[in-house]
Length: 443
Ligand code: URA
Image 1: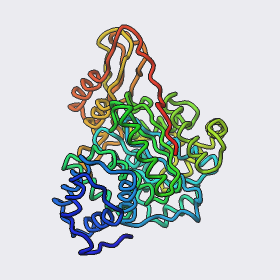
Image 2: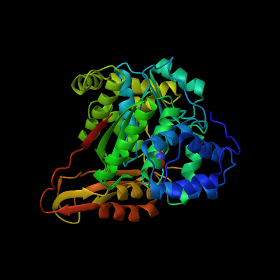
Image 3: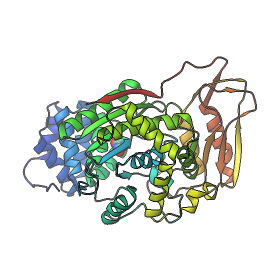
Image 4: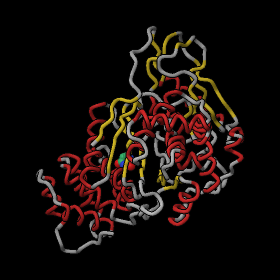
């Protein structure tokens, strides 16, 4: 853990240096981060620094130094004894993104131990930890010892990020959130990579989302973020691959918590939506290659398909639920997962083809119904959400359901139904196809 060294620098000088467009060295960046975490550098100076970074950017060395200063601001997990390959995956956040629930057991089924840290949903995007709490008893706040034990026993575990890991990130993120500095590539890249490194990852597979439901709404920005993170990995000795994937429509059909868990179980059972399955296979292949289990994507794909077909992926999922204290009867019978009391169809206003589905709006509709939270700490309703019936490219007839809104409170339904209807754009001709995977960036 990096200690604050009072008097080593003056915050004012470092803010000025960055504001004037010069680069800071690792010592200067480490001083700012450690001072901020120690409460010695006040919010107003750190805010000014963040805004200077927002306008001036950071070069590769600075971004790597910021990442390591954040990673080393707390505990850094050492997974070398239990999972020497220690490959982790991170998504930049999307709507209907339940890939971790499918991918982690599939990769574990191929013989790679996975110790995954995940987050809760915020705003229009969901979070794996909330989804897993659909299983009664599932413990997402394992101690370090329990977490490592689960990985050793079951071959995998998914845990909530504790305050001890990269505390600088949590503190900086809260400040960025209120100073209009979230949307800044070096700050996003260092935030994500610091948490992965603190979590013990030696190899990192990033799912960088692009489109209307993602932080990065253009291919250009998604590639810039992906390159920045791969560059950080190179600078700090972590093998990193970034897959750029489409988030212009929700992934799969289900958006919410329990509904997404059900869809993940379906997918692990060899069914499930094609886009979800394809993305899990693509990300899983990169994980197996980084872990040294497969030589190339074709070999890796075969291993993952085998784990799906044999049911071993689903068995691993069940083993994880059991190891983390969850009720496995809900895996065996997903019909037991929380169910909403009410549902309302979102009817197509006309005949046509679905041109686009604004993912952010669908995510916001699910949030309005109670599936997400507007503020950190708000409770979520595990049962509610939105299930799409039509995806981009599908043909619809007027009055046919485009989607179904699931609610526990009747008064929340009309606005959510209207929002989902407005998220769909229909046209008389089919849309041009968009690739699910828009690029892979390797070191
Ligand atoms: N996700 C993160 O973890 N950090 C950011 O800054 C943005 C998205």
